[in-house]
Image 1 (cartoon, helix red, strand yellow):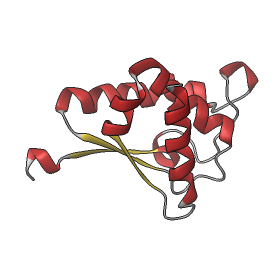
Image 2: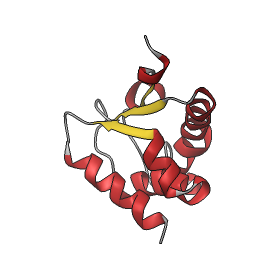
Image 3: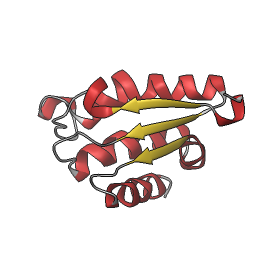
Amino acid sequence: MNVLDAVLELNIAKEFTSTPGPRFIDEGKFSGEEFRQTLLKRKFEEALRMSVTLRIDLDGGYGYGPSFLEEAFGGLAREYGADLVRRTLTFKSDEEPLLTRDIYGYISRAAE
């Protein structure tokens, strides 16, 4: 594989949970905040170090609430900047294709 084509994968259902929870850790299990802090940031930074894309696979999850997605991906954009997050992340969502549009919206609004 050519380094330019290299992609790092993160499957939320397999690597974090198939039952995403609320926005914040203190609101319940498997929150967007917990996901961002314990897994997403580490994988994002790894992708940056490797100069590759991080593909987030959303399939296999039993419903992603807006608060989970905004806290995870909007929170990442608030920390690293929306442009860098948009350049680094791609999303796979065959089961719910509109999730990708929603997530890019959370990333863009985080920059405002």
